[in-house]
Amino acid sequence: MSETPHQSTLHAAFAGHVAAALDALVAAGTLPAGVNRAAVTVEPPRDASHGDLATNAAMVLAKPAGLNPRALAEALVGELVKIPEVTAAEIAGPGFINLLGS
Image (cartoon, rainbow, N blue to C red; front, side, top):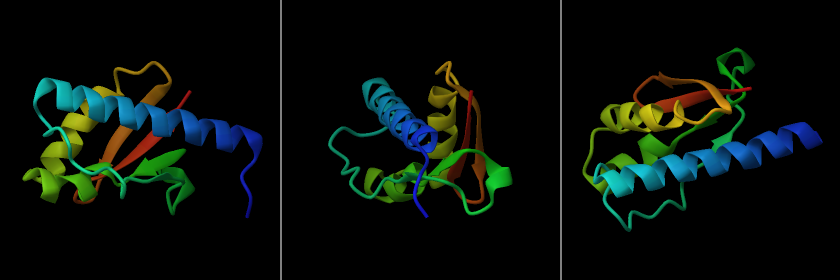
């Protein structure tokens, strides 16, 4: 199934928002600098009622950063909700984050 241009644009924007939020956590000293982000994904959630996109950032970065996934997710949500295009960011399960855009 291919993405529509809107979905592709939304995906790119939210991938950038997640990266910016992670950068802010590094700048604040919450997330150690140099943690490999290669496994971070931003993709549609399995259940569309959970939002536009979801990220596994807290789940995949917590262990190498020596942090609790849920605590990292809470910090990441705190940064994501500061972004005007992010209308909602909610933690699901042990640390996945569902995102809703405007």
